[in-house]
Length: 488
Image (spheres, rainbow, N blue to C red):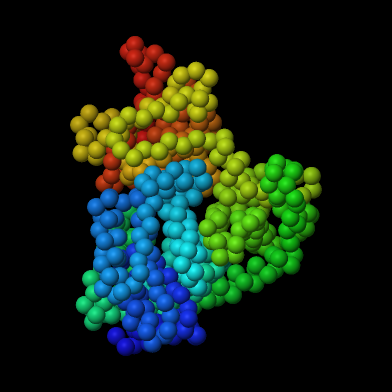
């Protein structure tokens, strides 16, 4: 117990007297131990301590409220001021559709907004989060499997902006041992056992194998992270020196928004990896332009996918959306501008939060008259009359939106894009590609032919609600045939 609190005090740094700390507490083991340790150090350290708990509104209400109640009870016992901030149900899913970050990314944005607002409200010096060494290892494994570059493989920083992570040198066993000594209960997220999530597959399947057959991995992987941290810093400096972006005031080509540019010849004379890093640096600059305070930069940062950035850096396309920004080769310049507006103003989104019937109007599918997409949502147990060619499984809330660069589904155990599944000739038949996305990411690709037929490509099945998709024609109610689809 003494060792845990002493190490925690050392991680906070000096001086602590007079500081105001805001602890982000979910109710899980790590954040519960951090809060208890901070409360024990408070008097001797001379700092003030507050707690905030964010309800995201994307899990069952009884479980979510149970977490909040547990945090409030713990704060009462520890005499720590506590505030619970609830995000209205559906807001995170709506942002995931309109802004393109995905459900988990949208939840993170809302959580960070809540934390920074509370930091300013109470005048705190630091937000403290409870990421542990195990989180670092799991994140590194996830990023290795996803093919991240040096920046993604760099170690999680101890501080970033106004966020401090004092438990990065603690293992989960350290945390559990401290909680047992203090006799403190903690909450367990029911989704933590669901191995359809990549982090959970790594935690419950891959890590036990590594511990059994390659026990030194827990020390060698952080060494890799340290090397990649140095590599990322070198590449960032090299990109800044060789490819500095010029900020151009708003007007051309993006209307009111400022954009970035550099000479095309300079860009393509640089090594490919430096070009890629320059694009990432430009995306960061655009994310933080305007009246954004430094401690809020994290809220606006959406990192483009490395695979899409590589295509842009290779010069294989004249213009491409990178998610948060748009890359363009124009008039001898490489330009970067905020891409979300270009991408989503032409798009659409349909948010589904409960069972029932929903319709995407024909206009959003590019149809002049009628021909909407009818979506039936029902419980997973109601399968007796389901037609497999037009169904897929997903969790609610669910969002329907247009396909964007980098969308992938897990098919036969592999992440596949729409273009990975169908060849060019087959893809050309579909005038609109719709993505159905839940908290795990894209659940299905739905191709809509001009003639009215559907193609439903679903990810690997799991325990979730059943979604049935069919085409609604102008004469549907008069008994005309409704075309189905096929699952591949």
